[in-house]
Amino acid sequence: MTIKLTVNGQLRQLDIEADTPLLWVLRDELGLKGTKFGCGKGLCGACTVHLDGSPARSCSTPVSLAEGREVTTIEGLAPDGELHPLQQAWVEHNVPQCGYCQSGQIMSAAHLLSYNAAPSDNEIVAAMSGNLCRCGTYARIHAAIKSVSEHGEADA
Image 1 (cartoon, rainbow, N blue to C red):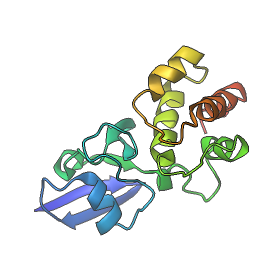
Image 2 (image 1 turned 90 degrees about the horizontal axis):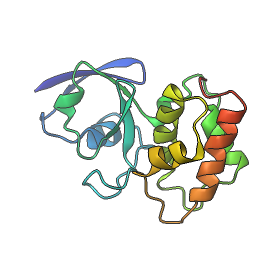
Image 3 (image 1 turned 180 degrees about the vertical axis):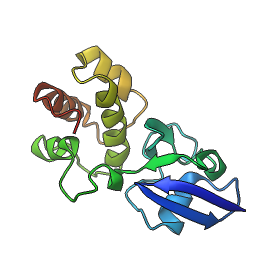
């Protein structure tokens, strides 16, 4: 089946089975390795991407559901080569340990800040509750998100 979708601003056309998980299309067909496989059931958030601006678990989203839609991956957050404010905050707050879940964490945080530039602590916790970090860097993740919102960089 031929599927057309826009990934990080580029129209892509693929001959692929309609039920192929979007994650494997991104990683194996398009070479975008930033999106990670975690649980394969959409529970951990490591595979989070944006589908038309909203978070989606790419491991459990068939590529056919992305047809004709805009997919943004971690690579697409900063297409001009400059770090996105959240990526910069992640560095400044020393967020990652193993780093495996971080692309999904950043994508969820970017969605939160896209509609709420100044989230409360409770709103940050709620928005990030679907993303698991096996290293337990939740306090640093929270601090990084808060710093971006406090510096007014959320819309970057």
